[in-house]
Image 1 (cartoon, rainbow, N blue to C red):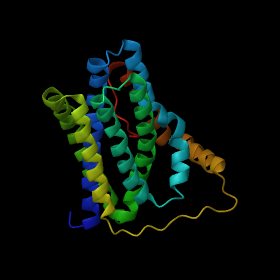
Image 2: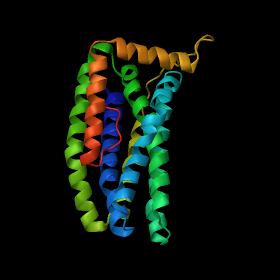
Image 3: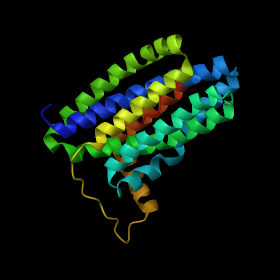
Amino acid sequence: MRHRDFRLLWAGDTVSVLGIHLIGIAIPIIAINDLGASTFQMGLLNATEMIGFLLFSLLAGAWIDRWIKRPVIVFGDLIRSVLLLGIPMLWWLDMLAMWHIYAISFVVGIVTVFFEVANQSFLPFVVDGDKISDANGKFSATNQVAGVAGPAAGGALVGVIGGPLTLIVTSICMAASSLFVSQMKTVEVKQEAKPDRSLKREIGEGLQFVFKHPLLVRITTCTGISNFANGFGMQPSPSLS
């Protein structure tokens, strides 16, 4: 708690996760109430939000290993903040259509993939190794609180100010998260790619490590089945966890 950069990263993550949960409430309500989306269209919307994880997660992991991670976090939140403002702006101009929501949700999902991978990978550069478990515990606790408070706050906000204006609040959350992380002073050492290391080879080695590990393969399988089943019954928020 006395670690300034950890407090900034923790605050940024908390605000960002809260914003993600607000998105999970506001966008579906806009699609149904303002655009009269059908059941099929809602399923398609769910798919556009999540397909970025299917398409880009492995690439993002290999790329971000080679990048400085803090700018990815900062610009990831800024890009999502700007993109989300597009929905209330189009609504205000009476131009909003389902394809706009599909497109914005798809791009926000892709940006979220890179943001999540960078955010999870950055923590070991911020705190010492013996503090990582404690730091992860704090992240997990606030994520759980946001998971409860976010949908409740989102529902209340939508009821009071409507879905489009709730997305403006979400955009502010993302911008605040970007501001917090941009104030950090942690110096991260960039991992230079070796000449004989291709992205394909790194991705393959990562998959082999996961599927040959007796615990990781079970965790991955369990998470995959759980997320697949949850997709039938609820609107999931984008997350790698």
